[in-house]
Structures are given as C-alpha cells and as structure tokens.
Image 1 (cartoon, rainbow, N blue to C red):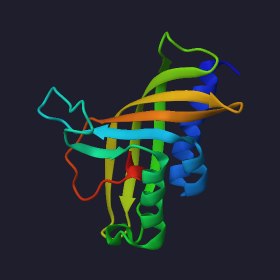
Image 2: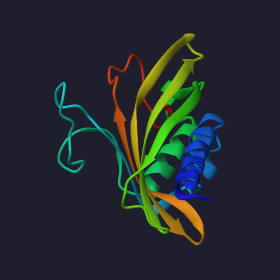
Image 3: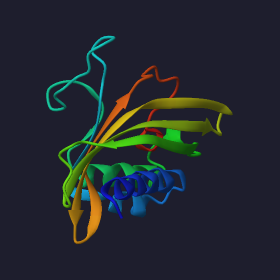
Image 4: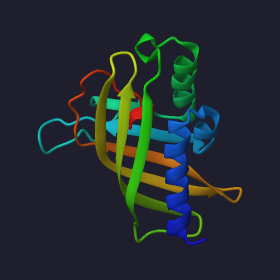
Length: 164
C-alpha cells in the first residue's frame, strides 16, 4: 500500500468510527502521547498558534484527554449530547507533505461533518482543513498530532470532538 493510500485509509476510518460511535476503535487510532488541537480564530485571517497560551476550540495534549471526553459522552455526563447527534464525515483531497517516509508522514486534507441534532431536528455542516501527523507503530499507522482548522467557526449550538 502506498503512503497516500495508507493515510487516506486511516483518515476514512477515523471518520467512520466517529460516525458509528465506535469510540474504542477511534481512540486506538491515536498514539498515547498524541495532540488533538483545533485553534481558534483571533481575527478574520489569523488563528491562535500556541495551545498552551491562547484560546483553542479544543486542545488535548494526550490520548488520556480524548479518553476522558469519550467517557463523558458515553456516561451521559454531557447533557447537551443526550441524545447524541448523528454525524457523517467526508474527508477529501489528501495530500502528503514532501517529508513523508516509511515511518512518518504529514497529510493535509479537506473535511466536512454533517450533523443532525435529534433534540430539535436541526442540521448543520462544519467544514475545514485537517493536518494529520502520522507515525508507524508496530506496523500500523497511528495519529501523533491532529490539527483541525474549522473554517465556519460560528457555532449555532454545540461543538464536540465527533463534529470535526
């Protein structure tokens, strides 16, 4: 399998696992020391660039943070997610950076996530760009870093990890 095909497969699986609420499979795609980051827009053209010092839409500095979020989703500790909205992720136009090797690669792609909220029967589409840093661990590709650029950051109701 080519590097681009391997990256595309991993990105497609990530979206599928989120849509099917296969939380354990989704978490298994991430390295223990991963970062998951969605910077906020500081103005119309500039995004935050330091998740430790500037506001972010999301920032998890390890898989443990993602695991905690999944626990809250599963446990009902997030009342805004009962019932959990339905989602469909579409990931397109993956491009590998020139620095790709057999053990590490950076892939950039476009994405949309269609969300249907059962509670009030509303729908919304979030869209943007992804930057995934992937590493090969034990023969399998894993996500070391994920940066989510949310282009339409006006959030009508709620935004969660499964919506981006």
